Image (cartoon, rainbow, N blue to C red; front, top):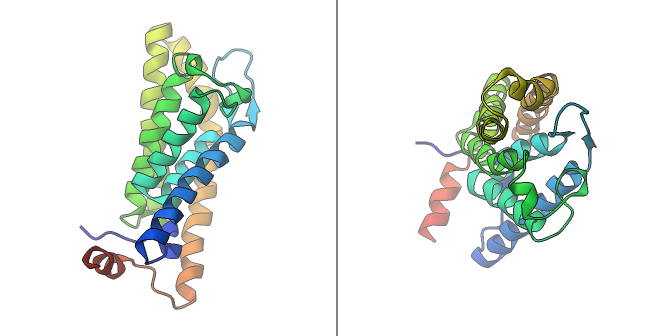
Length: 209
């Protein structure tokens, strides 16, 4: 299967040690970015799950960094919050958050970033409709985990969907459309420079070296 270059791969150094430092910097920096986006939160009086900028950050980071870097980035973010840093929504932290009503969404972030990153590595972020589909699949993955935990806590009923899904649909659609405009446009700009953006040949060379 043809593997395409992600945005992060476009700037990745060829030398192994520098490439490792580059990857680590992206993972740490991305985790901090998710924490900052978590500060953009709106509390819903009828729901234990706030509206935040985390979801958009997680899905886009997956696209930009690729599957394994994106998922490690989210894992680092969760570890930071579990260790006591106030990086979760509303500045919260600690293991208690992971076992609360939003814990499923946090775990789902890891897999959602992997899904969008995996699809980006197959070139799905280079066209509008495939970008939309990649972001939607990332959202579906996220809600599968988030709602799964809520169903365990609240039961399988309409009320659970009211607090854990319905309030976020409009915002998620808007985020998907924003990504569908920005991400493919970025690749068109890079391709206009005449620089190689496919990535398959470079990756073959990296594996041989």
